[in-house]
Length: 112
Length: 113
Image (cartoon, rainbow over all chains, first blue to last red):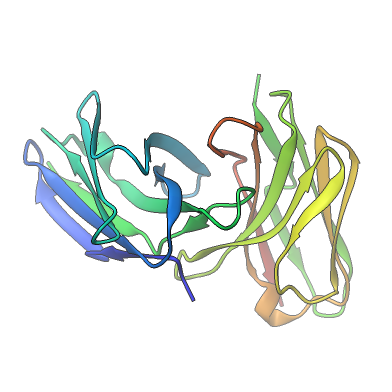
């Protein structure tokens, strides 16, 4: 089954608001990554957080990781229309260094 | 200067046919992957090669055969196509020691009729 499950499946917010997406996973990990996929395009890497880190920032992105709860969140602040996309978390399992496993994704829509 | 490229972008074919998708990366990465994304956007790894050597082979029908002529190329050949093979196929690459940060190609939308 999926390593990562994301919540919510879909999110629609007003431009300028903050968007929060959550990811839960099942096994021990080396790191957790977030990717964005615009419609009809490939995935683009956004940010990576290692298992010994709790929070990381990159521009308007803030990622948290709670390994005790096996969960992560992605916060996008001051959303823009261009943020409309699907967002995926991906975990690098401790047991398998060669692969990452993607969650089910959150479809984010930003209303102008 | 496309980092990871795939051809073709769209592929429409009939059941029973054999088709190939090509992938090339110019990032100098050692590892390449094939993923399948279904209609619900669920993305699942199929294969991974490291320096032309197969390192990941998930539960994929043996109608699917990857081939890596060199570390910059990973092609996917599919025999006897079935309706259920319709999906978007993504190639990706990563560099050893980069925490497996992956760079994706634009995808190939395969439609089997």
